[in-house]
Length: 84
Image 1 (tube, rainbow, N blue to C red):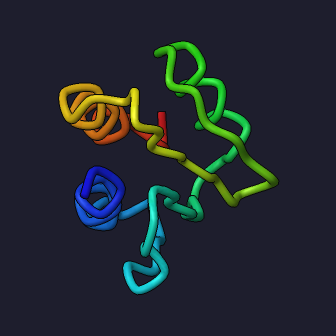
Image 2 (cartoon, rainbow, N blue to C red):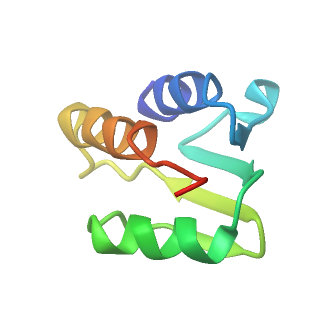
Image 3 (cartoon, one colour):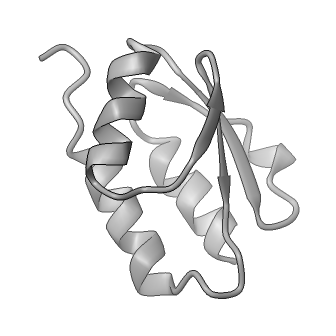
């Protein structure tokens, strides 16, 4: 449920590409249409633990990740300004 919520929320952002059909478990894989190094650095600076390979990112929602933390991650990603 958390992964699906996260994927649906970030899929609305212009700089994110996510195939919602692929979100079947607790893993969300998405691509960014911006500088992936800057985006990754931004996420790390906000204490978001995520893995990546190039422009492809992988978010895993373990059992110990709360819905509140999921919403906070969505908020932080939504606040990112890819052109700044």
